[in-house]
Image (cartoon, rainbow, N blue to C red):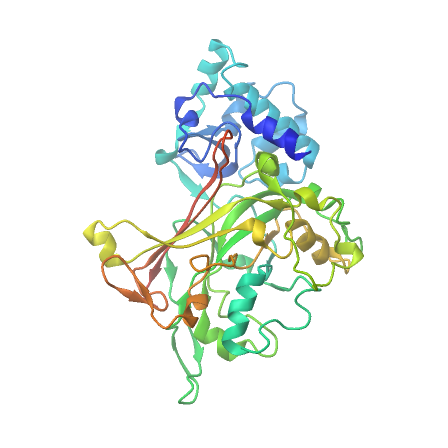
Length: 436
């Protein structure tokens, strides 16, 4: 799809549901993200629209999805998104078109609107669950701005290692400790080695957040069969927000020579709504322009069309201390970046992951790594702020180098352009609790 076609698609349609037409809503009819919710009847698949959730299981049971293939209807009645993810792009597109017809003011007659309205659940009345069975989780290091700032803390003269501009760097994370937004995150304990003494075991003192974007694999690939860059996005079901919580003091002692381990495996928070790639089509932008002198990607990583390989997605992180909440002080914006600044695109990350024949499976989660920008204020984690002589100052005067117990971190993301609707991701939120 061209950028022009994407922008025309983004302008189309208003919903008969008033809250979906609010300019400040994350979930207009052009978005239609998928999630799994429970409003008292068990886990089921829903689609976010305005301040409501369209219950797809109820839609399937009351013939509102009639005409779609049986496999799609059966997948909509499942308690998790994996069966739908596995069906592939044609099925995703067909279901999205049908849901749009049900919610579009110009396509749904009054009788249909009334039937659909009975299958809407207020978001405030629903608890969100993990949207899929996540068998594997891989985290990358795709922001050159993040990699450069962090590298400069340890290697001021040479912050980037020689492989960075050739290889999308990543590591295999821990799927079992991925939690849904709103879940309390307990401060981890681990082995720590201060500069002035020997190692000891105790609560992490340097707890950090990481502002990331994740994407779910739809249908996977067979072992030994790499996914070409031209086909990579056909395997992406949709995007979410990821907070890859990190205990920096545990990490600094354990990471050599094999990389992250217990410093990151204690919790990873994701947002509940999966945004389809189709919803982001109007906001596709050129891939990151590599500075003169940087090597071109090797042929297997060269994008088919670099003119729309990126996504203009604004990312924000907010911090609110326990004292701020008790005093009614709003969360403070502490970082704003954009996905368009990634050195490696989502398609390149997926293609590289499978380039050795590694098989990705339906429901696997891949994340970008911390997304930071080039300017002050665009840092995606507190570690990057360590280079500043002064700690972060909150509105009530509290200071932060790293997170304290009671701190709440909220990630937000949205696409926004004049003449187009706001496509939001909802929130990815977690509150730090004291160590066990």
